[in-house]
Amino acid sequence: MSLLLKNGILVTNEEIKKSDIFIEGEKIKTVKENFNPKEIPKGCQIINLEGKYVFPGIIDSHTHYHLKSPKITTADDFYSGSVSAALGGVTTFIDYSDQMEGYSLVEAIINRQEEAKGETVIDFSLHQSIYSLRSGMQEELKELRKNNIINSLKIFTTYKKYGCMLKEEYWEKLFKMARDLKLLITVHAEDDKLIKKIEMSYQNLNNFPPYFHPILRPPETEYSAILKVGNLANLLNMPIYIVHLSSEKGYKAIKEIKKRGGNIFVETAPHYLLLTNDLLKKEKAQKYFMTPPLRERKDNEALWLGIKNKDINVIATDHCSFTIEQKLSENNCLEILAGIPGSETLLPLIYTAGVRGGHFDVKTLVALLSTNPAKIFGLYPQKGSLKPGTDADIVVFDQDKKVTISDLQQHSAANYTPYAGIEVAGYPVMTILRGNIIVKDGIFCGQKGIGKFVKTKESILY
Ligand code: URP
Ligand code: ZN
Ligand code: ZN
Image 1 (cartoon, protein in one colour):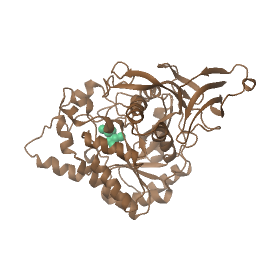
Image 2 (cartoon, rainbow, N blue to C red; image 1 turned 60 degrees about the vertical axis):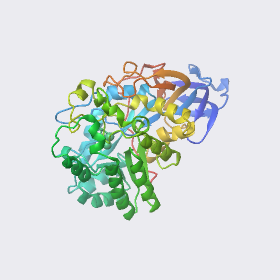
Image 3 (cartoon, rainbow, N blue to C red; image 1 turned 90 degrees about the vertical axis):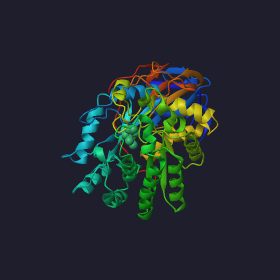
């Protein structure tokens, strides 16, 4: 099976050039201008992409498909989540393996891989979440790293009430373990003690409307948590990665850690760049409810600046979708289900606001959405590049295609999008996963279960 993509404008993090791409089986075989017709094998499918951008497949490096707790499961499972992602040009997602009571981390990873297997339509990798330390963990992590199963861990400095918070007294021990195994620590950074203190100051209130969420979890909580984990990583001479940075104050903490010589890397999400917390005063405000909460216009601007300054390295979605019914079932912000859908809108929104909006060029777009996460999470160059010999994961992007994002036009099982009404100028028109066309002209034509687990190398941050 071979495929020739002709006359596209190839964009990588390094260069933009008019070129053809010849794909044989699952791999990119040749990248060159004016591929000689004599070299085209019989039966090769030829597609003329005249004038369209050709990017390496997008990597959504922060997703929660099929997230389940005893009481609730997300709207998107691995199938619907990955189909919606593919329709947005995403060819790889990185999800989370939960630490499970009574099971080893190796078993937890196998369990999560099994859940995705036979369901996902694009490739995936996993971060391992750590909620508590127990004996034998170092050996389990060693085994997972040795076999290239994971390259990153995730800790939460909040969510004590959900049992996800790793107590501060364990941080140093885990950080040292991770450093010695060259595993990257990634952090959801909000100071739980500070949040609890603020909550307690409203003694006479026990039902907080949605607009209270940013009051209960203000930017100071992000600032404080980033300083704590950043200083510790610095002391231990190791890199650290902050997920979903949301605020100007949080960015200030990043700069302070860097000033002290820290090796700190940062992800933000489209909602923190584009939306503001006045949405939490609207009807059905729950649709815009996630943690950390939406901030203010000045915070959006600080994050755009952080990208420009190369202090923010990755944009990922934190896709964690619930239906409107699930969201609206609570009005108290201590109980509302946190999380929004996002994988499908990642590329068109960030192209429109980031590139067309004049914040950065199209090579930087590729770096933020594909090459940087691939390098940081050990997938490069197999993913995140257009180099011969690597996986033919490609998104064809029509920079002139205008689309108004709407609930109906989206494919997440959430059945709504917080970005409804936004007009994007530029949209993915074809998604190719390992040489297979899985989306064409907005129609999913891939196969359930075709997605594979991808092994990970050591992070370039070590
Ligand atoms: O509200 C969010 N972000 N839900 C998903 C879990 C997390 O904190 O990333
Ligand atoms: Zn989080
Ligand atoms: Zn998350």
